[in-house]
Image 1 (cartoon, rainbow, N blue to C red):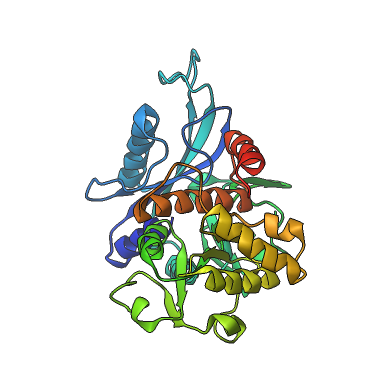
Image 2 (cartoon, rainbow, N blue to C red):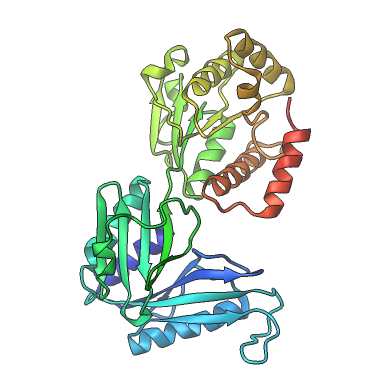
Length: 362
């Protein structure tokens, strides 16, 4: 979503009109869920996706119509046999796509997009609302901890006494008396702290960066943490692993990946991470090494439940061998954890998580 919003901002800043396609709700089985986006640009390109196949073809055609006619509307699509709206798909579901026309004449649009781009770049938590009560005269509001920024022809969102749907984590419609709103959480904290700068970390950081994670690498050897070795890292910290609290803060929203050069480094990093309660702790290593570190942590007074909640060994069990393969397994696990935290976990992922927890713990 970050890249699409930056592209939207770039096109509008250059004076070009854009249509944003957004799946606002679904029913049944569909290729993509609410919150999927695609742009329709004046040059004919269409970055992003709302599901592929004929469904996306129809959505893009509708988007091009919106671009030509300078209008906005909601497109319903039926993905099963229906005498009126069948599009030849067999997924069995239904969805609605909001085809949203943008140009620079939209009131207060550029300040909202600038603030959105800033939130996405800084991974500052923010929520975006659309007032779709009258899709042709839509309104938008970006809610952050600093308050809302509004734009569009509908002024309803400007006068809300409080942010609606605060407890809703997944994209979708929010109903208020007389109004239809769509809500999407645009930016979640996605900060990964990688302890260790070895081969796996070197392969992992650029992979995670491409998946919209922000990575900080922590090492006790300065030669293993250079800008040339980790050009994609948001931060590189040379630290004494015995005193990590003096160098790198860890919050409850952080993901921690531990892969230092030895048992004692891993022990120091895991001990510190456990005291900070991040949302994820993963530790690389053999079962013998993990058992050694576990025994020391138990002796330090950490509970067995807290230690067992760590992902050890780190990554999904896909028989990864090379640093690059191990990085893929770790990235896949972080994607799964992120989806669960953001309310996007699917049923098959829940089944797999239960199986993994039963069969792949030390």
